[in-house]
Image (cartoon, rainbow, N blue to C red):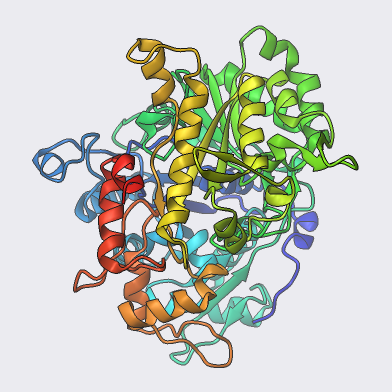
Length: 578
């Protein structure tokens, strides 16, 4: 397999290079327990890119549907269940009947969608046997060629960023449809990503790269999701579900109401390296941003076109560049001041604190506080990946550094990093709601360290209710604005956490995973595939067939299960009293 620059060929292509090429992108379901609230920006970006060269894209979004019936009620799914495989097959069949046979069909989904992609690949191969079938996104980025073995119906996988390489994949699909594989290969029309297999079946492993200029990318083709083949208004359904807040059921809480919202991304990658995080499909640590001008144009366009009152940025960390934040504020301040434009993003608490030690033993602001500038631009929400309030666990997670450089402070016997408390205070003073997400059960975490995180949540509640009378509506609203949900530490393949000795030993013991002695990589056998099938969005405890929990912490398995159950029941007092 040869890896080549993926964007160099675009300069030589004519705008009609993909004229007549039909491409369908299928987005997999996730988080069945909540209403879908983020339109699939990845497939929408790829569709927009393909249209620039004359292709005819279609998006099938399997994630938007929530069916309320007896099955959903029996399973406690208040907002409804996802489609069954049979229902998904019917939707795909009806769509292909309308748009015709496709040159290329792409499956998109997170690392947690292996089961869905396996089933949908079989369905697609039966319904449109001549289409080139490709998997992309987080699942393909992590497993790459192994995915070809796990899902034999696939013709290719495409890993990393897909904005440019999707055009090359479509060109290959066109060449093979026009001339057949052998003639296209012999004529030099296929990309160097072709690889020969033992059964002589053509397979491809595509390596995606970063576009040279993120500002040059078109806006996501959300117009392709106005309604599905049955007339269901897909995009409108997304717009009417808040991006964040209690009803979103994504470990976020807000102190304000969102009526209509949409989401987008303003950057790729993240310059930090938290050990539990996998971001290979979005550039890893190769951080790149869109300009303030480009982002502001998108904000204003969405407000005008869709009538949204809130825009959510899904970036791993929007707050990296203070200069870009100030430039954005300079453009958006008139809109923000009039209340026309509200938005939110993610960041780190130390970036909200901006504290650095000074020569006198105190702490000073490194620059104009980013949160003040974000508020000037219309920001009213920042999601902070706090993860833990324990200094030791933060060090273990790779989140120490500046988070601990400002020292600590004590509250009710708990020791917190000062950057965390100061970041929350600064955000609150800037009139921005700060939402923290948390993780329990990180490798080696003790009960006392977990209790420190619960103590921080209690500190946040005390902070926002200061001066309010307990039992009043204002008091209850303030309490409800603090997120109390806690994720379970999950070892996703491709993360540094997955390579932790304690994690590898536990995975071997509970799921019989085997690791290559030289590379340390998991062996892609059936045990590994079964483990990947069990992965979720860290909202549920993972167990093996015997019911044994996947527990990386220092707690016994029995204590781990008990703590998890109490946290799920929102009984923090019980955990604090253990």
